[in-house]
Length: 380
Image (cartoon, rainbow, N blue to C red; front, side):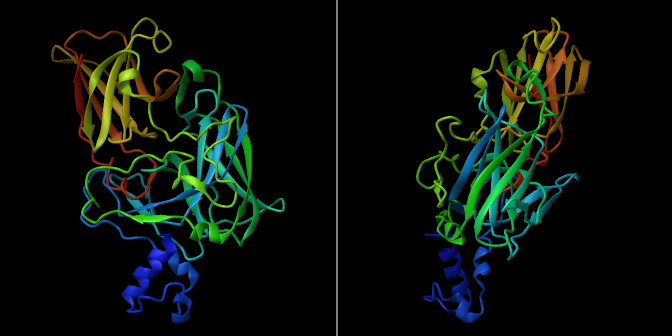
């Protein structure tokens, strides 16, 4: 089923005119009414949950410039939540009737194929001139199917050929070590040509999830690029990758069991999975030890960027080290938060406190999670 057909059916049922699919305009409904959001799960837990529907996505294309690569994808306009600075603060962004579609950009490092939390801006050109799309930049976002990416609902002036000009970089907030050291310090400009046709959006598949499963504490699986129902729709080729760049990454972290160092364990807080390791790698510290903390989504191991954390080390009843952790990118650890410590002793208690939630927008299924955190404790 495509989403417009589903939403037309539900709208028609609401006004007692079932059976008139394709004819809503006769009853005063504009085509944009089909952009109305699908149902929102009631009684949602303060945790990751299974939403009410699953939507297909199409890909417009990919591009590369220096160390950076990007993919440009699209799907139906839909609601999402912006995270605000206040505790458990979030603002709902509703679909506007003028929205043409939801554009999504994934930015990654070509050498390590690692998704990048990065400064980025989007500009849409037509015949070489900028067009007003209603937004000046895209939000960093979490979605259950795409993982970590950048996106927003945009408003194109009409069907036709366009160019997406994406400015990415430099990578500033995450410290860069190992394979990232001395790299990703410049701004890249990447362009993807695409053709917007409304029929591409209307033709995307839309699936509802069984009512008895909606709201359960689980998540949809990550997309498999290039497979049916993921990034293979649309009139622009729709491939899930290319030979030179591969498939876009989703922001899934390296399995913690494969990270170098001593794994102290994993705990849940705010429904995030918080894993902690101790490493002695010289690149992190001058002869001491390094505490690495990896907060991720609980089911698909998606990184949680733009988080503020503090760690304290308690020994024999006294705190011997307490400091904020630094967000970092490393060739072996990937995305994580770290703190150098002179040394650890057997029996040390490490308490990790999440001071502020991930400053990323959320799609359905993530908007109630990762807000109210309790400190988690590990023992060396």
